[in-house]
Amino acid sequence: MRDFFRVGRDPVLAREAMIATSHPLSTAAGLEILSAGGTAVDAALAAVAVQSVVDPLMTGIGGDCFALYAPAKGDVVALNGSGRAPLAASVSRLKALGVGEITQTSPHAITVPGAVGAWTKLHGDYGRLPLATLFARAIAYAEGGYPVTPRVAHDWAREAALVAGDSGAAAVFLPDGRAPVAGARHAQPKLGDQLRAIARDGAAAFYLGPTAEALVAYLQGLGGLHTLDDFACGLEDAEYVTPISTIYRGHEVFECPPNGQGLAALMILNILSGFDLSDDLALADRLHLQAEATKLAYYHRDALIADPAHLPYPPDALLAPEVAETLRRRIRMDRVLAPALWTEPEHKDTVYLCVVDGQGNAVSLINSIFHGFGSTHLDPATGILLHSRGASFRVIEGHPNAIGPRKRPMHTIIPGMVRKDGKTVMPFGVMGGQYQAAGHAAFLSGVLDRRLDVQQAIDAPRAFGFGGTLEVEPTVEAGVLAALAARGHRVTTAANPIGGAQAIWIDPQSGLLAGGSDQRKDGCALGF
Image 1 (cartoon, one colour):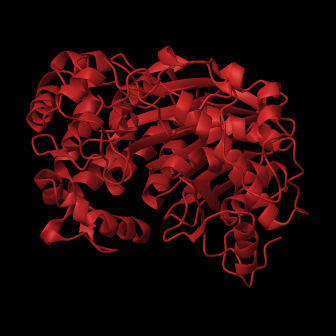
Image 2 (image 1 turned 30 degrees about the vertical axis):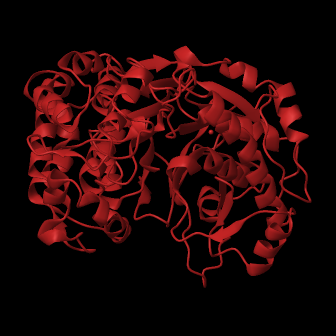
């Protein structure tokens, strides 16, 4: 039991239905839909639509979406709602234009957004209430305004200088020339118009007609290679795919397959499965093991994960026991080692939510514009802020993740789902760009190795080894930092909280729902 004298949260408990998001207005909108008899997908779409308005630097209709859907009876379904590069995009074309690297604000970082297509596909197959009902709260907030929450205000201010570089984005997101403070009212009426149109006409309102024409003209004006045909193809790009999975501590963990980095999360779990990570393990040892496993898995991620049509190896090959064993043997407890590929040859910002409805259906959904405020490019005619997911592409001929015609880039956003003995026990997810795969493994180890409840596992101190540095949250004691440095880690203290998470545990015997939401963000879990 939690020490009630210390600051913290307990899991939210409910018996019938629950939603957990990183924004209170998003959670409230989803709960309202559940109370009205909506499905888990209905509630998720209502929540993500609200968050696209009230957390604009993290998500929006100009971004991408992945989801895992676990029906009360039946197999887990994965949806890839990531957009594709324009047909004219290629390494040779970009090099001819003098582009050697795709930066956050480059027009080539903007693939055709996939979120709207994913939302409407999910709704058509698993929704019950009309989109107009699901989007009502989001439209009201967009048109009438909403109060900016503290964490959103903090992140908004951090990105203000970058946003100022785009006149369309600055006009919407820097009223009076500065980022709104916590409690300030902010509105996006043109975004409200877009949501009304999608509710009325479906995905065609985004990928065809005046909105697509305006977006293509805007992107071409920035130097983009986008055409109306590229957007028209986006109408059908969202597709159901077979999820990938591994067994960790007797539980089956599901992820979306590449082009997402869920494969890296499963590789980390496979590596860690050979170690004792119970609560008796010292924190320095735990963080060291997680960092070393992450380094190995991310090395493979950056070299090998790409559009599924361009993968050098099928996911099952990298999830084979002999791969995990080979990589595991490369970990030393006393010092860091350089990563190496299994084959022995010589590679941000998001919202996540999960819902369980009264029928026992569960959805794990993540929607992203990648960097804070995405590409920072906002089309003044439509009010749509466009993502920067194409910045993941390489401008390197022959690389699996090289930019190419109608190609999907490697993605960091990954929803998760856990089952045991064929029954869903937890939709879960971790936000935080590159951190997400590492965060999935660390969170699941907390729940399945340490037997923490979902809120305790979310609240646990975090560290992330990436790019040669081990970033550690300031809640980790100095002695642990010294022990990590002694093993060769280049340790730095995180300037901002590392990621965010939501999860709902479904007790397999009683059906009791226990929801957790990260206090590093503004959100909460609610149920009834």
